[in-house]
Image 1 (cartoon, one colour):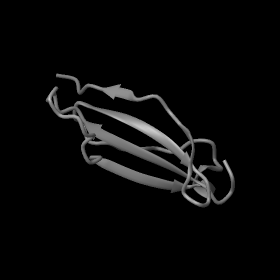
Image 2 (cartoon, helix red, strand yellow):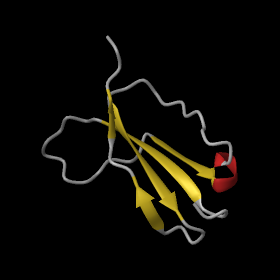
Image 3 (cartoon, rainbow, N blue to C red):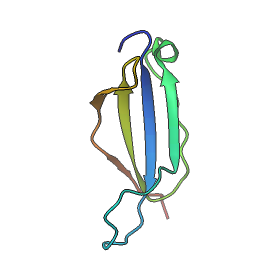
Length: 77
């Protein structure tokens, strides 16, 4: 990642409404500057809800240059 890029973490609640065609607003939308990632890892705390999480890498102009597949989260019962 370029030194002036960002890592953006997005969490979306799973709504279960199969008739909805637009993506809901993210429950969590947090950005980390590249300088915060120089230690090799960060800790991310998310609400304990049924959801999926995606990561995006953005360059200095905000353009997405890489992204992850969704990671599905299910709270323990």
